[in-house]
Length: 194
Image (cartoon, rainbow, N blue to C red; front, side):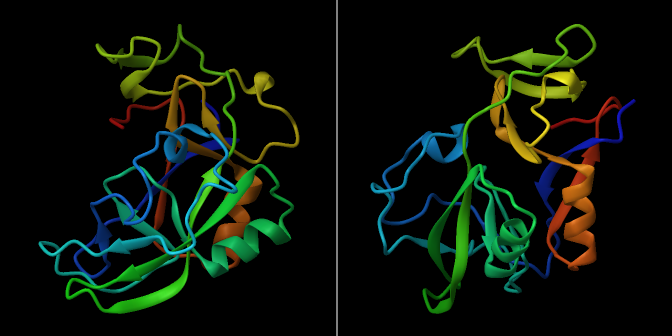
């Protein structure tokens, strides 16, 4: 069982805000969850709204959401840049509260570019999508061929499920050292439903 890579996800509790709708001003694009570049076509005035049915309003560094975006603070952007992460775009987004009041303009949709074809299909347990059989709908267990992940890649999308983000342990250590908030990780090779 690997301790070198982890699945990265947002952490939800009743105190933090949750986003459930696509960004206003952004055409519905699978590029935001599949690793396609959006530089030059992404609007300057994109907006996200906190869910009216969720009581939390506190902003954290990784904003929980149901739209599979990686919504991050300026602090996350700075940590990633300090760590030399280059395979990402930082698409600016403003976050508004449940009453449509601006809360912060210091957030980004972190668009991790490209995918890595490294899933161990034999050892992983998953269900494929009926609509797009080349995509995986959910996992019960994730195992990677770690030797297929390029050595300079510290954050990446899985080719079989691009909305899923993986990070290398040294990047996770940098997140912890910088006290980033609002994320959780899942170990590989153990039972998980994601």
